[in-house]
Amino acid sequence: YYYFTAETNAESGFAIPMATDIAFSLGVLRQFGRRVPISLKIFLTAFAVVDDIGGILVIALFYSTHLDITYLLYALGVLFILISGNRMHIFQRWFYISFGIVLWYFFLQSGVHATIAGVIVAFTIPASPHYETGRYINSIKESISFFPTGPDKGMILNSDQINILKSIESASDRVISPLQSLEDELNGAVNYVILPLFAFANAGIVLNLGAETNIGITNLTMAVALGLVVGKFIGIYLFTWLAIKLRLSTLSQGMTWANLTGI
Image (cartoon, rainbow, N blue to C red; front, side, top):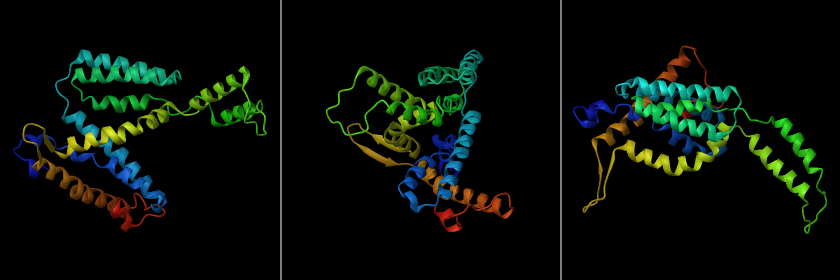
């Protein structure tokens, strides 16, 4: 990356090719379904987490401007509220969304890269459901006993049955953890809006919609492409090979060097 961008305005963007490909790779891998060993999916997912943390740490260390201590203290105060909410078992998603936006703003104003706020907020959102799955199943079994089992197309529900159905709907929402629920609801927006914009921004594609439309491929595009396709391949493959040869790890069941090369 540095070779292609040396002495240009893009020279300082060395973090661009660090963590931009994994999200796309996971999406592509999902299309192959069961034809891909589950061990490969686990490997790529685990690597995505480590890769993103590494990229975010680089952003935090090298791309943060001069710190504003006042806003940083405000951010720490909001973070304390989020952690307290988690410890107090607050499961309302809007609690974490609202304070998460405030935390993002304070990070932005403090000089710390605002990307860090998203990661921190995600750590505070409860990953366990409000209702235990077994308790939910037992509640459903008890609730459906109030309804006739035979076919009845013309059945009109009474007020008690309507309330039972509403309680089932409410319980169904609570059996899904807030973290999983948010992930599921944001899936469409991330895949069809954020990722495409993310790709355009990080690939260095220039869109000029003035009098003369021009789509250009810059040196930045080549630098990012080689950093991802060549640099990451060599780095990930060799470090994986080294870890296995030093017996720090082993190839999981279903994984081979051939499909590791492909992944």
